[in-house]
Length: 167
Length: 374
Image (cartoon, rainbow over the protein chains, first blue to last red):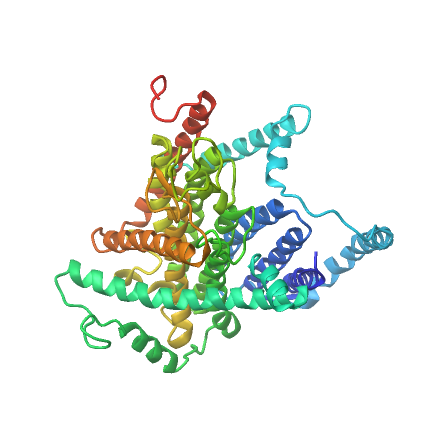
C-alpha cells in the first residue's frame, strides 16, 4: 500500500476518533465517528481487504452511524452538551487499556520492521471469503449460527415495535 | 486510469509515480467535468420534458429556440448569488454539508466504466463499491438538515435517512441477482458476460457475433423482476418522485436544503443529478448490456472510433433511463411517508428476496426461462 493513502486514511481515523471523544456536542461526535470509520475503511482498502473495506462503508457508515445520528437529531440542540471535565474520570479508567494496546502495537511494529521487503500482490478477496463461508470444514457453522442470531434479533425487533391492541 | 499509466510511461517516457499522479488528477478532473456538463444537460432535459408533459413551452430564450443554454445561465446566476448562512445555524457543519453530499455521487462515478477502455477506477468490487459509497451522500443530507436549525430541514433530512436505509436493502438484493448469474462484482465483467458468445471466447476476430446470454434483463424472468425492483428502489435512493419526500415542496418548503442558496445549493443539485446518472448507468450496465447496442448481437470494436461508438450507446441508454425517471416524476403523485415504508418493506424486499432465491434455484438446475422447456 502506498504511503500517501496510509497516512491520509490513518490520519482520518485518528483525527476522527479523537474528535469523537472530545467534541462537546453529541451530534458533532457522531459526525466525527463517520470520519473515523471512513478512515478505517480506507486502511482496509489499502491493505488489500477490499471487501472488508466495502462492508465497513456499507454497514458502519451507511447503516449504523446514520441510525445514531437519526436518534441524536431528535434530541434538543443544547441538551446534549457535555463538559470536558465530566470526561476526566472515564478518561482515567481508559488509560490502562490504551497503555496495553500501545504496548501491543509497539511489539507489532517491532515485527513489522523485520518483515520481508517484497510483499505479495494483494488478491481479490470476495470470491475467497464467499467460498470460506460456505465450506463445511471452514466457516459454514459459525456463519449459519451468526445468521440465526441476526434473524432472532430481527424477529425480536419486529415483536417489540409491533402495534399493540388498545386495552 | 490503469491504461493511461503505461501509455504515459511508454510514449512520453514518464516516471511511474508522476504518470500515476498525473492520471489520477486527470481522472478526477474528468469526473468533475462530466458531472457538471451532465447536470446541465439533465436539468435542461427535465425542464423541457416537464414542459411537454404539461403542454407548456419550457425554456426557449437563452441559446436558441430550444433554450439549450438556459442551465448555463442559471448556473452563472447561482455562482454569483450571495452565500447566506443563517445566524443560528451550526456554521461549520452547514458549510461542509454540500461537499460531503457531493462526495457520495462523485465516488460512485469513479467506479463506472463508460466503455471497455474508459474507467476512472477499475476495481473488482464494482457494484458493491457503488452501493457502499452512495451512503456517504446521506450523511451530507443529515448534516445539512440538522445544522440548518430549521424544522423543515430536519424533517426532510430524517425522511431522507429513513428512506435511504430502507431502500438500500431491496436495491442491493436486486443487484445480487445478476451478480449471482455472472459470478462477478466487476462491472466490466458483468457487461462482458452479457456479450459472451456461445463458445465462451470474448475477443473474437469478427466484428459482429451472436451472444449466448443477451442482456441480463432478458436473461431470465427473475433477472427481469430484479431489474424492475432495482429501478424502483433507485428512484427512492436518489429521492426522485414519487419518492421525493425529503424535498416535498408542498409540505416542507424545500426539505433539507431550505436554508441553502447560491453555490452551496447548487452542490446539492449536482449531487442529485449525479446520483440520477449513477443509478441509470448501473441499471444500463448491469441489466441492459452496457455499451452493446442490441440484446443478443454483440459488436467487437476497439480503438478510438470503437470506444467512441460504445460511449455513445452507453450514454444513450443512460439518458433513456433518466428520461423514464423524468416521465415518472411528472406522471405519478408523491407517496405518503407510510406508503413509502410499506412499499419498501412489504413489497420490494420480499419480491427481491424471492427473485434471488428463484434465480439460485434456476441456476442450480441450469434453466433460464421455464423449467423443463428451455
